Length: 231
View (spheres, rainbow, N blue to C red):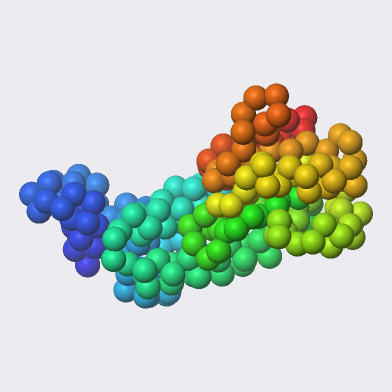
């Protein structure tokens, strides 16, 4: 059965039976991979998806499991032209898995608070990347709050008082500096003049003196970059 699963995975990756046989012989089933997780999503098999990430956690950290298995599998699903139902199922499953991982994350060990402002990320791969960043920041010991940028400004006041963020990270498909600049300036005034602004992935923020620096595309890289800025 393991040999068959290795061959099936290699065939999905290569599309060529002779190449797949060669790869399967050399590699074996190996640790969990994006292709096998995608196959579980395609079968709508939640038990198999759980098993893939559980196997990954044996040899990888939570952060590497997310970056090397979960997110690549979702990107593979997103690139296909006819897989809307499979992609939605995968994103819903990933949302639940990340929620469970957040509940198991240790309590904050650092005093800094980070506010994630998500603008226009409906259920989809981009929203999973935002949730992955939240998980990574929490596991790094930071105090984190994820809120929608569409909230009325007055709704942020109690959250800002509780969190007292040292950084605001702008996320989401619809995050544009020309739209958010005014509200962000007011949020920074409420949170404190020293609050720093950053962008993440899909946020379209102009560069230069008036721009906002980007933390990058990957949740682990973004976490490392933010920690470097805060040190």
